[in-house]
Image 1 (cartoon, helix red, strand yellow):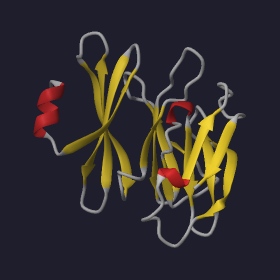
Image 2 (spheres, one colour; image 1 turned 180 degrees about the horizontal axis):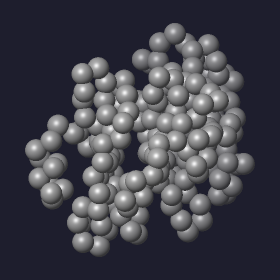
Image 3 (cartoon, one colour; image 1 turned 180 degrees about the vertical axis):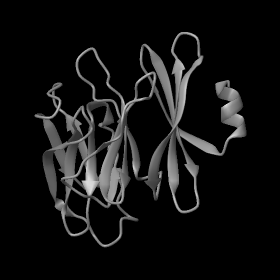
Image 4 (cartoon, helix red, strand yellow; image 1 turned 120 degrees about the vertical axis):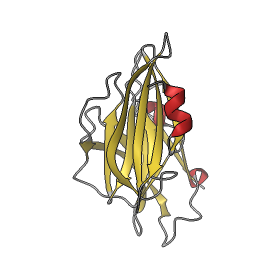
Length: 187
């Protein structure tokens, strides 16, 4: 099956693309009866040939806000991982050419929403839960744990997330410290 046959004949909406030296990953979602399921296609970087094409068992309520791509950037290497929120837990899957690795689940913390603030190249994102400060998080490489890097104390998550935007919680990485140099500013 060719990628374009799958792309144009399926009900998958592709929303994210990530390229490495060995593969290009196209990530999308397909609507099921009550939620969305993740679909990933790995393409050869050199030929464009489909390396693998998988549906990842998942139950995502809102693919726009509950799905993020983390590249876990370390010097001279990218370790891409897709992360999503499911029933309050952060789950993730490493993007490898064969796509046969297991889904990781963070069991220790729960959130109501994930927020991409433009630091996903470093594995960073924001976890939101009503009544608590917004938390700056980093996904560990195995996908089963999250490191807390800091909190936006001034940003108390309100009852509705409808008005929370990435500009409410913006951050930057200082000097390539990859976690130790997070600079926080609250809107």
